[in-house]
Length: 147
Image (tube, rainbow, N blue to C red):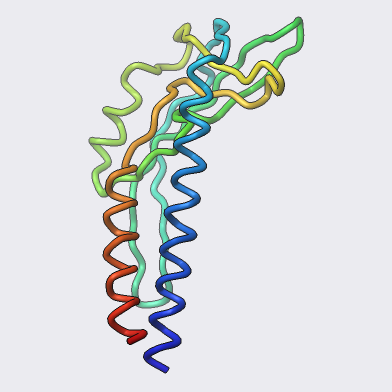
């Protein structure tokens, strides 16, 4: 049973690392995306819960919505960071994240020229090194359990 758990940890860790690499590649590709002017229509902080009964973790996340046009067609986007954003345990930190995006603000919206509905306000990624460090640690633990 210990060996099976170790193998599953290794597989899950490798899958997590591959997913992070895929997101990082999207961030790199987005550096050539075009931009258009957009307008913030909503910027809010939301409490999110995860986990199971008796082990609920509450975090705060920044939520943003913006409208923009490409080729005469209107779109509404809600992705702040293309590479994903880490939630925080601090409401103040999540609020600070939204300071540059008050409702009504004019912003640059970066969009995929082949799929304009695929858009973001920031073309970077948080936490890549953290994801790889955690994945590496779980691979090591997985090997210890599997052996």
